[in-house]
Amino acid sequence: MNQNIPIDSTATNGRLIIFSAPSGAGKTTIMRHLLQHLPQLEFSVSACSRPPRPGEVDGRDYHFMSEPDFRARAERGEFVEWEEVYPGHLYGTLWSELHRIWANGHVVAFDVDVKGGLNLKRKFPSSALAVFIMPPSVEALRQRLLARNTETLEKVEMRVRRAELEMAQAPSFDTIVLNDVLEEAQGQALSLVSEWLLGGL
Image (cartoon, rainbow, N blue to C red; front, top):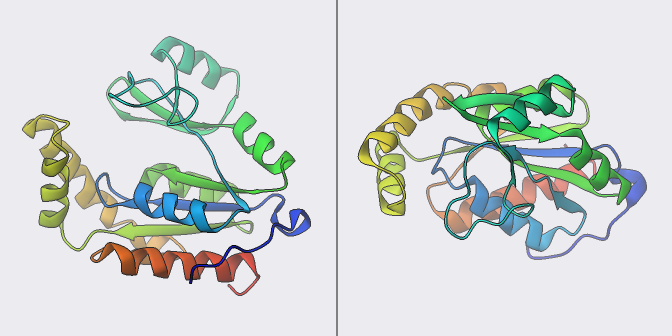
């Protein structure tokens, strides 16, 4: 499927698409594919307290902020959900992002970690589609993370251990997409989301 579906603000308002996966499973690549083909989706930019990686842009990839600022915003109730994914590295979803996207008449599209995805699904049980992107195996995930060449071996192994726990959470999502062959996973995800937007799910 390679069609763009027209925007209907009355149908999209208040709805959310949640894509979650272990780090390195390919959820960001699949989400970018959906955003290219479904104009009613708009990406929700998460906030985080880690420093930007090379090439990352504040406000596009993440809303980067210091840990004290992040915690202060959390205290003020500015986050829909947030968590400390790794020590000192906090990630969360700002209410302001959701309100901005819904005001545009669009569906909020999330690319979040597994715990964040489940938190969002619990908050919006009837208006969200939660999709888990499953890697073909733990070893395949390890090789993908190593191929990135952006982190130490110790950090890669830390992510792999976390991924094993996260993969056990897959049944808690509405549906699972296996990302073994990327093009097939992209096609399956596009079909699933398109049907859901049209009321087919």
